Length: 212
Image (cartoon, rainbow, N blue to C red; front, side):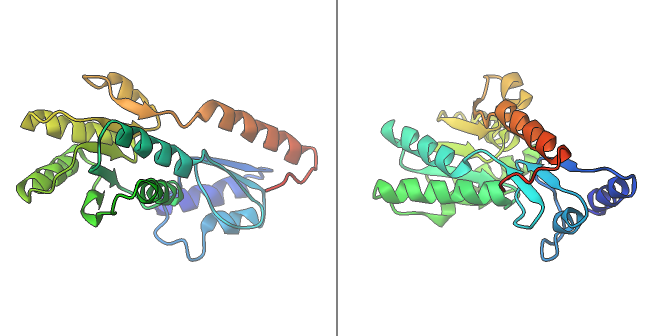
């Protein structure tokens, strides 16, 4: 949004020597990324974000491998129709989709586009999605949410229908801990990512050029 773009402009105008952004930045278009524009003036470090541009240092977990391992785990438990819900098709989400499809292909399970759905972020959006799938008799035996909030929405929707199946989210956030029952979630290991970001900041402050 315009607020995030203006925030970048404001901090650069304040004379900062580097910018650290946490989480994916949500711009209307990435054709000319404000992140890349900012990086022409000061180094930009992205935590759980990705922009391919000079001066931008992206730190993310391996979402592709994490997703593939999660799907393989569910398949070992005889789950073959795994529903994946996502809201923003950002870099992390695209990696998750790649891992999802790769795990299915490795297991010889045909990919079904009906089980890969983009939904709104509100609980009622997820509830409507689950309800619509059940009305259409689209079968699924597990749910993965690209974020904990989506997984929690699916868990509540399934509880209302009396269905019981694995529901797993990503980020291991407070949302997952406070759910009832507690939501299983993939921990993207923010602590080591933050430590690496500090190391990068120290290197940049000392005039070094870290490997991107």
